[in-house]
Length: 399
Image 1 (cartoon, one colour):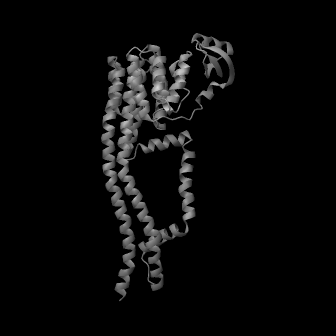
Image 2 (cartoon, helix red, strand yellow):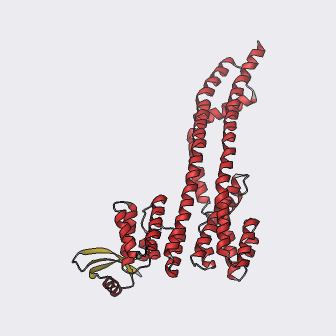
Image 3 (tube, one colour):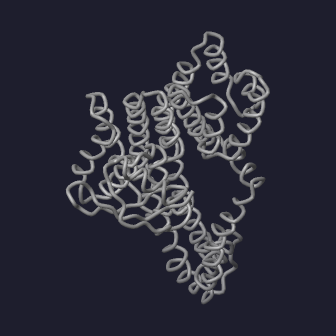
């Protein structure tokens, strides 16, 4: 299959252009003719992979609006090409309008909507395309867009809560770091000069503070290299699946914060698998898609084992129970759904459980994080103050 750039004219004599995936010029002409277009010229513009070269990104709120309107229009009996045409006009002059214009052109010449969405992988994720594909096959596109709306609204609200909760801690952290840098680069060096002039015996704590201050004042190029090098080295190390799995697993064992990391990944897994399963995607295919979307290499590796177990005929709940990374509550609820034949409802229940508990856990984490940060700042300032006071006390005692 290749990508053809074409020019054609319609019944009104207007010239239109676009791109079409086909296996030859004859196929291009046939598909255009079926939509009322007559081919003028077509040039082969590369393989199908070039369809995915777009760097366009769309705000999540705009995507939610698109899903809502598509659900309403399709429920009203409007055909898919007409709905895309109407929305293209509504969003004309925006990035979403450009995306919808491309979808409209591809759908108009017979390409399925999910394949058309593949032209914008940074706009429509893999699970979104898979769910839309299931909706097209089953004839349940309105319901599919409605479920996508609910998921993206929850995700948008959760990210909004996290950002709002981060504002105060980040401001405090920034001010704290500025204060610490000022103490060690301006206050302490002046005090060191005073101690040198007085030739006093310097206590251990004061010497430690002086070493740190000297490192910040004179060794900042080395520190800068270290600060830049650590993230770069970490990013390179994360390319190794073994290191990434070990890091993600260790991250989930951090007190308080680790549980939240695991909940995020499990929420993505159950939410996406539930949507895919309800839309008609087979369970095996759903697990295969979801394991790439959890955002946690340790859980992804566990899902590889689960996928192999389900492929061999083992129930999903037993495969999950064999992996310690999945909590017993999740396994029990899924086992109940399998037994009663309501796996889709069980997955939705697990997803709803995490969707409710994650915001509460975020508030708990930040409720603990704020005082810990303040106490750390007080501790740093106290250490510097004590390092300054101890030599003065020695001078007082000497008198």
